[in-house]
Amino acid sequence: MSDGRDGARALDAATVRERVRALMPGVQADLERLVKIPSIAFEGFPREPVDEAARTVAAMLTACGLQNVRLLDIPDGPHAVFGERPAPPGQPTVLLYSHYDVQPPGDESLWKTPPFQPDLRDGRLYGRGAADDKAGDVMHAYALKALGDDCPVGVKVLIEGEEEAGMGSLEHWVAAHGDMLQADLIVMGDVGNAKIGQPTLTISLRGMTAVAVEIETLGAAVHSGMFGGVAPDALTTLIRMLDTMWDDRGNVAVEGLRAVDWDGADYPEAAFRADAGVLDGVDLVGDGTIGERLWAKPAITVIGLDAPAVDGATNAVVPKARAKISARVAPGEDAAAVQKALHRHLQSVLPWHAKMTITDDAAGDGYLAETGGPGYAVVEKALAEAFGDKIVHMGQGGSIPLVMAFRDAVPRAEIVLYGPEEPICRIHSPNESVSLEELEKCIVGEALVLVGMAR
Image (cartoon, rainbow, N blue to C red):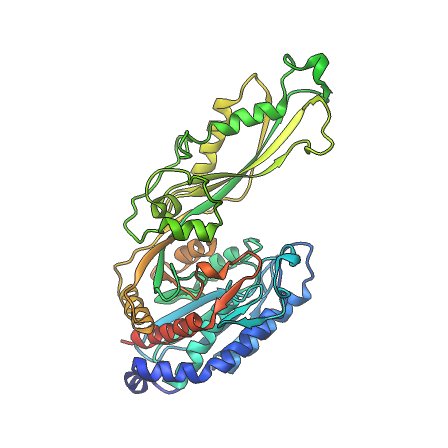
């Protein structure tokens, strides 16, 4: 590989934009090829499509100029794909991350076209994974292809196959292989813009934890006419407990769950209502701006409930009921401490000395970025130039546990999060799609990041 520094100085934004525009037919073709593969890593789905996606990503990265592209064996998880180009002397290294696995399609009758049959409509490519996160895979590959031998910095690419399934295997692998991943800047290409055409950096992530709580009050169901009103009902007990977790405005009321200050972008109410599908006339919950509530405050959601179904319900006092409670943790907060706070709260509100069992899920901390480093300055300038608009900072209501794994394994690296997703993409929902124009601008932006990182 050539030094690349002289070539990089010649690559202004206009030249990069022209190169990317010429590559867009290949971008679309490779994205369509990936979308056709039902790479669902969840338990119960076939493994071969996941392996096929890994091989396809590896071939794409090789075709785009990476060296030593290979599949990594991840214990207890699907293959990750890794490739690299060594840094010229004195130049930094950038690590690019994304994932090739996808969410299950759900009810396929809700899709206008089959989820794994890519369909281009009005400039958007539809299909499961088109945005989350196969567009991120293509973004990395084609930013490198646009630069070719003019790439002035070292590059490492890590693309995993288990992010959606949340196996956690890659996080353990990263912790054990930090020497292989050392970089000056890490780009997490698994997020997106606040809206179409608005370049956005995600600077905070809420963490996540969950607990299952089971209430038992009787040895078996008993007749509600003969025993109701005296025998304690497990479902009623559970409902009373769950109701204490929020105040009348819908704010979290569990002691020990804290918020952080938020001075980034807001989320306009009309846009939020439309994006979330809130029904007309239904109030939003909580206090503060939507940005604060969504990106800087904790949230608690009952995501599952085991109780007798309404259809076929009998007139009986319920002996056992169970709920799963998901907690989103404010950026920078300790998820394990939040889990303990949930335990304390549930124990404090347990009525009638009912029998309670609490089972913990995994816990992942929230993340709050340091935005004052030189890498952030390069990224902000590059994306603003690619999109022709000023950068905004946004939070992410969801969590990306691998961010924390990278932070611990590569402590000297700045971590930035951007990508081609935006609200219209409807990730995880039927009719997921990505704007090819948005993807093109992101490829231009990432190429300019690599050029701008040269010393």
